[in-house]
Length: 338
Ligand SMILES: O=C(O)CCC(=O)C(=O)O
Ligand SMILES: [Fe+2]
Image 1 (cartoon, rainbow, N blue to C red):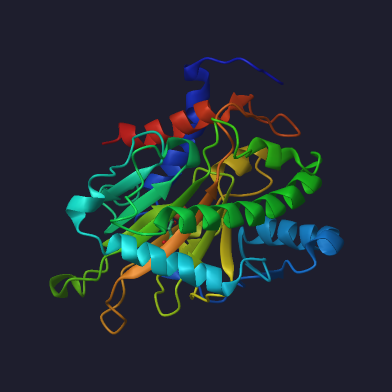
Image 2 (tube, rainbow, N blue to C red):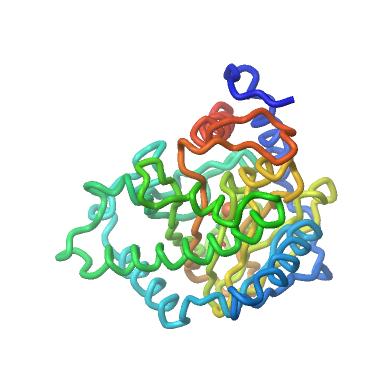
């Protein structure tokens, strides 16, 4: 059945379903290091697209997360983005607090504020989010941080290009036209809501060294279509659990490697694909007592369809819904618990 209009009540069960799953994911679980983390080569993309699309599809349906190499973003650019963001987080909190998170817009700075349904405690981190249409008044001045805006916007654009390539492969596989998701994430639209998130997980204070029940980031799925994640060598902690195996709560560590981008499917693409592409649980655990206790930095780019775009899968498994309404439901389902 295909419906184009629906009431909020009719939309609610889907989001709550996701939330119910998420609130059961807070336990330690067990580790499963035998799962394969597939690496996919994006070189010579235009010529190899059909082969790449096959590899992306099978990694996504089998495991749900994968890593990209030869993705087109130079290592020097990735390092520059990390160095620039470390300069941002090194600013005094009073300066960063001049650029606070704008609720509902994924733009601006917040610290120890994000509470996950899986853990009920705030993630031990600070973040600064860049969502192009909502950045007025949110950029530190050139005196405070020279070059920050230009560097981060250039990096955001590079992430977008990689994200759209991957999504274009999924569009081919789902039977949409190749540019379908690129139009849905048009950066020139005022409804653009893809986000670059800069993340700084605080160094572990000595009194918390053996507290493995505190999470740098509690278990969750992302709300978006596709997430691209950059990690720093030596700053591990990311663990994933394939969506279809979430009942078993077996977690696989993704050791950081700076030449790859780790990707996961988010809830929006899961819905858009009529559940063919599963979204993935992931979390960032605290280091064990014998591991590096210093700060951890990561960069995440969330490909999230523009607000006005209608999400409707090829088989119409779920009612049509705009990306804006979908996210509203998902965020409010999370928020409603607290
Ligand atoms: O920092 C990481 O490695 C993961 C971040 C993440 O999952 C998120 O912000 O959604
Ligand atoms: Fe995430």
